[in-house]
Length: 449
Image (cartoon, rainbow, N blue to C red):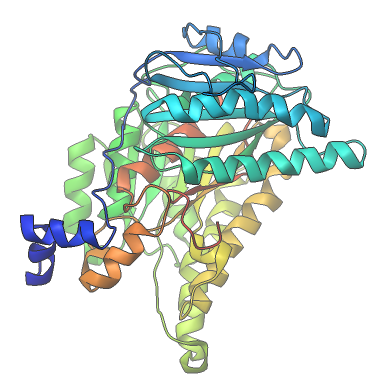
């Protein structure tokens, strides 16, 4: 900790920070923990999907308080843990008043690290229906910015064919502390022919999961979190990180594979390593990545090519080998692929044209691959981290780092485990209905929000 950072976190420093309007960030609820307080369910237009999914999760629900236009506005007698709004039947502008009427008391009465979850349909139908669908996105993003105490808001768009079996894994993730740093986000839930039957504390029990870039930081957190969920980890990293890689592999009871993922035979070597364990690969998490930051006018061909090769092209080459049906030790049917995008790729970032290109490319790869793998039951998704507290970000000058930390709705940097938990949700067998999605793990970062 630098002298400036120590001064900032001392009692006088905290007083100065408070005068500058920099409040202490809220402590976030993490892990497989449920909200403190009641889960309130509001059903607009008679939708029943949320009620069925919550029952699958073993969660009881209470009726909402509705703002009836009287002043003072009605409220809850005690803090509520979550509000789930089933708005899957909402199609008209005047129905948005029903949403406001249940949101207003809930926003005022939500507990610390509480959750607001809105369920809706994809944009379809006539002009009004499509405009209302987009209006929900604006409501979700704004509510997320108005919530306090680590509470978050999420909008889930459900395919018309989606059932409670398709939804329960996603709803469980969003309500639990695993989604601590996912705020103001929207993604889609489709329909799967063979969904899982329940939320499990060991959803990956015995399944082989490959994690690249696993020696430190976010990669090590991914390995630990997925091992906690029962996975048999194959930890992959470059030979120079061999000692740290072995330590992570030993810690999680997995195996280490020293490998440069840009090597032409990288996919084959991963498959051979998995095959020696007696089976195929259930999931691959493409976490390995590099930065070579320079302003575009100072970026030469070598700096450009190295980032695109490690962060994007290597993934494609490895996927091609591991997805080939003839590859012994490749990805099994019903498996999972997860890439690591970035808010820099989605929003752009000064001095990172090569990095932004590679990470936006990951998002594009996910969207392109997902429909091609439906027949095999393989899902393909990505997470897009924002500012995450790692050894690398710890080297950023303190004042600049503090600005990055506070440039989101939760007023803090995320933890590596936040990225790992989101990946754990995406590769959970219960998340079969979620594919082709990019989920930002950024606390609703104001960049590109």
